[in-house]
Length: 459
Ligand SMILES: [Zn+2]
Image (cartoon, rainbow, N blue to C red; front, side, top):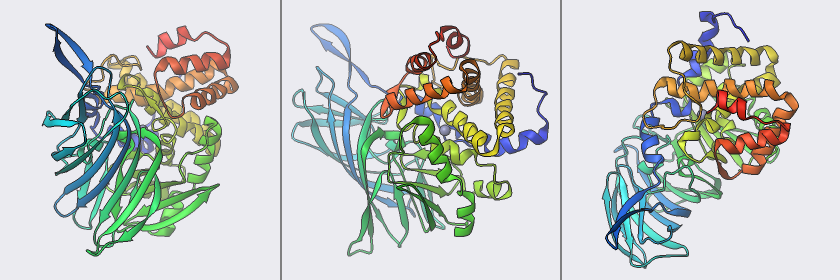
């Protein structure tokens, strides 16, 4: 595949979305350090020091949130049901910049906060589940983007800035969210909408419940005086929200959503798991969450100008499978989230707009990768350390990764490749994955040993 250097013109559409993908907004240097965060503490035992994993295995979160948009603050009451690791009475949650007011529970002996963590000591080891109740408040520094006028708020990745949680991508739990909203604003949150009720103080409580488990970074909400329209794909309701765009414009921008959803269901062999999928045009971020995505407000103008510029609709929707439901076990294997979402958006482009559009995408990914090679910045897709990724590191995970998936498709042929994707997606749906899981699925579908390919391109 030898391509001419890309003309500036060909690069332009790419640059509209290239640097704005979900995780690209400089979030990872922090997330990697904190979300990587299985917690180890050293304890003294019989004169010998040993490390014990004190990360809780969370079963469910139930959270009642009062966002104060004008003051950019949040108050929360939360119940967490979890299991502790063996041989420990300690448990550690991420608490971001939140201040914990109290932790209550039958076995709670004491708690304290340090380095954006909440440490809880229990009075005895717990082999089965335990429940604690936590009250907290704070002014999120990131993780919630507040805007006073017009009033909006939406979340971006750092869930521990607005609720106490285990941020390890390997920890999956259910979540119930009650959002207490003032001024007649609308709200969207993770999971299935349960209804809304008005209380005496002109506060509307929006209730959402997600019964399938996903990692904490996929939880979130968006609040605003949104215009709203909807569509349907099978049994799935597709909701589109915006402050600034008309319902006609929203329908045009998101017209392909149903087709994209159906395409990913077919390619993964797994039905979309929620009863709705919402897209909210708001602010400056692209972030997938479970059951909804926020997309930069200005994204609409590029799609309205060119109806084939829908990479981001499909990229974020692809995460409902690859990322949210099939999740990298640690950020070493982050390409299993991001290269997949990037490649899948091009696979849909091929299906919808033809081979030329797909080839153009792939050649852009290759150009980005060639540029990295020229600079001597190439790295394996499986990162030994994802501590402080540079822009090149992220480009490797997104674009070299998508290019490598294309090469793998060439190596195996179309049928064996997609059979392997289906096998992998079905087997690991609702689970955490490492690269070896993917390699094994592709080897099984193609009946080929892929050690050499993975050694050359992945490790
Ligand atoms: Zn993404």
